[in-house]
Length: 81
Image (cartoon, rainbow, N blue to C red; front, top):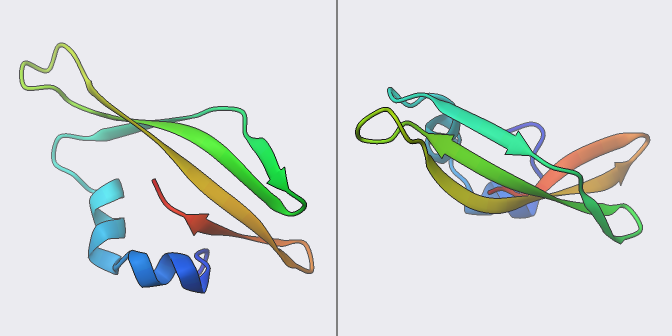
């Protein structure tokens, strides 16, 4: 929660964040090269992978994450996948 902006904290509870990182099926994440939206704001495409029903083919969910410069060389997540 420390790395989230106020805007991101309003949209994500700690239970939602826990869901990203602690599922019984296991998760994997692919984060690709980002693009600058404007000065101090970048968007990164993300593919979230979870084990499929047969455990042979993972389920893919495409999303993005936005990171913003908050000053003093600090960065924070402004939009979660």
